[in-house]
Length: 159
Ligand SMILES: [Zn+2]
Image 1 (cartoon, rainbow, N blue to C red):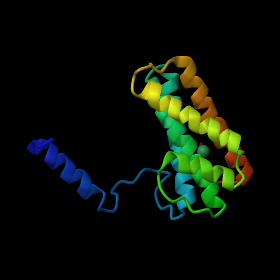
Image 2 (cartoon, rainbow, N blue to C red):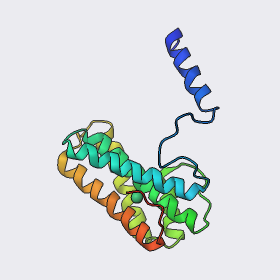
Image 3 (tube, helix red, strand yellow):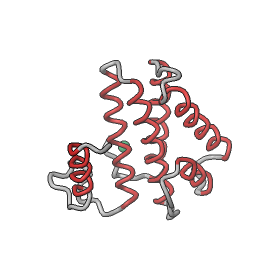
Image 4 (cartoon, rainbow, N blue to C red):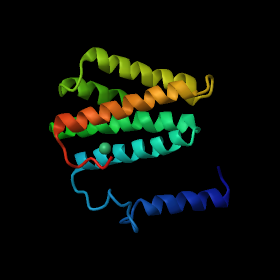
């Protein structure tokens, strides 16, 4: 990774993250509340996943988006309950889900196991993501999201 093109692209991306976003995404703009931002990012991921699912393809992307939506939804819940979400480590968010009373340790372990299973098999292509697996993970993500929205009684969901 030493080409001038690559270095220029990296420089532009670094620079972009130092600026106030121009033309910000509608629905995500002017949100000061970190928890609501997590929720809305989950809404958008699910919407995008749904769109791709209807087009019957890109299963790997749908599965990735669904797992990220699961994590963002959980992050919203725990931040709403005033738990600090320290890093972006995938395992941490499931543990916080347990501590904040969202679900049991058993559920957290199963979600984490599923995530690890996805990492090891479909993401790295030693197993290919298929339609059934994709639809179940997508349903898992939308169900979790909906239940969190109902339980917190938030009006900020844009699904
Ligand atoms: Zn939503």
